[in-house]
Image 1 (tube, rainbow, N blue to C red):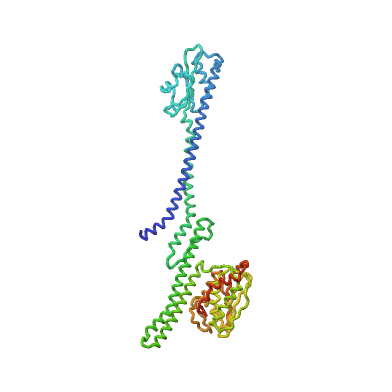
Image 2 (spheres, rainbow, N blue to C red; image 1 turned 45 degrees about the vertical axis):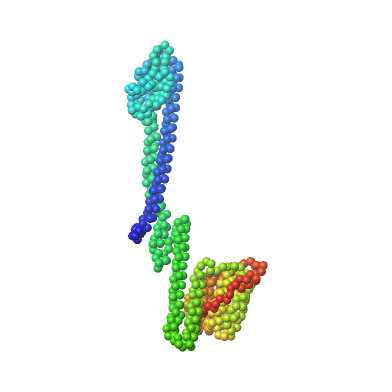
Length: 506
């Protein structure tokens, strides 16, 4: 698939999803409308049929009551014949709309009510044959030119009159059911308008719902190998599943950007710092005189020293890269006093200085003893590099409010105000009045990474010419005292060998 086709597909994907949402909404609305309309229509039809059936049976009751007396209610005289009975019955009973009364004598039509009807059943020979000569009450349905006709035929006889009559009550059922059909049609019409309104509303709502999806697509398209700064806008949006998705994608992009930045920084730092020793080694090898043993020894020593420096640089860079991983620190309950004393015993061998152990915090705290040891050793090594022989270097720890502080104070040249921020950067070294170190300039970067991994920071307090104090400030996550905490700390710190001194950063 070409890039143009892929771009077109991406542009149309949200609209396609929007169209599918509208389609499903309309389908559900129309199905619901059809079900409701059909059920309503069927209920109205059943109610109409029940009403017609009840009306037919009521007419039979009235006929029976009228004929049993034997007297014509119109004249008060006895009926003279079947014809008089039929005429009286049809005249006395008023036909309802869509209702028709008919009278037959000996199978021949004779009388009907005056209400107009869609068709003349009196002229329908098939209907006459069906009902004109019944000998017992008969109910049924007849398919006329005007649709279905429900009828009830009742035979009529009169003592002394040999003629046989039939009175028929007929309902034009389709016409009687027409209001139910009109109601159904009205519901369909209103439902159609409602469906159109629902479609418009669903189009707008679907657009608002899918806006985060479009933002995700737009952000993803805007991210390139060189620009990973794009984020999905989430300000002002209601908290829902799509907003949570946007937050998750943004968090993922943060992690990706951080990882890529770390990789680029590692490559840039490695390329920047390793180029110098490689150039030095190559330059000396190019001018090496294999026939001169002294030159060979000097060159081998120089190459070995440069390789050691390269090894330290690579180790420090790898450590800084791992510092951005969650498993960089492994906190555990630690006796801070024992840890401070143990670190002091290790660093006092770093140089011929007046080492002093100041305060120790008599608390148990949750931290990574190996990483804290590594940071303090790096600070002590840095202090030893910049402090004259016999100079004072102090180390200690203290619980201060919500902070747990470890510090290394020296009596060296200190750090100028202009260098206090820069010395924590990678490959940075002090300038003003400070002796240049042969380290790579990663020591304080590693200390800062260790502090940051604990949720803390590194604080520098220095007066030029009067020394510097580097303080590792960690959150005071105190742990309940253990039964034998000193042994625990000794075991934990015993496994942490003194790290190889890290190059000074001043």
